[in-house]
Image (cartoon, rainbow, N blue to C red):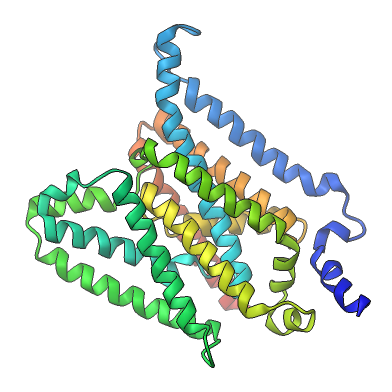
Length: 342
């Protein structure tokens, strides 16, 4: 009994207990990414500030930029953590959480709002709307997972297939409603669906901070268990882990994280994949004790760096999400083709 209970710790420690890997080898990528993130954050807050340094006007401008900075932090952390957890649950590093239809559901709800209320939908903003949007996505995920993981339908591949089909269905309904919109209504909808860092609502930031912080703490406390889950279903069950329960919990956490990110800035399909792929390249092992902080810091450095460079170098602040999605999509195709050639 003693050896059986101790086995998950040994298997789960991954890099932490592996010989030949010093603590510095594990920490330097995290510290490097964190340093870049801090530098870009300071640059975003202080660069090109027309007011004299230290004056009241200077700090007013800095404070106005804090909303965008906080939005970037929560979106980067949510997307990075959600993708790493999704890869843990599916044991597949090519898939992204968008395969479960969350982005398509967001597009459908936004399209339905404009379809029903017309151009007046642009006035439907605020905390109630944001919380309702997040609650809808989480309830959808909870109902789907509860149904697919109950009884004899405990099949992750079936879940992914149903997610793809639902995503296609949501997209078809959205397209139909969009074709029935007037040009002015479609313009309102396009503004809602376009991912933008500037869409962050400062009133929602405390809710996002509480949700992301609580999930991050929960995941960190269970990081060793998730190391075992990442080994696969048979190995995890053999080591005494309740695999179905853990996978269901992970997927619900992913749904909550994705709902936070999508509700704040809109759909970002490939950003999480881009961050997770870079994380796996720089990580010295597969332990969540290393991949989680590394993914979050790389996500912060990537999104903060892209925001600063595109805004102050290329004067294209509105294209941040477009460029990141393009880079993530290209990387996705490269990884997919490389795996297909093996």
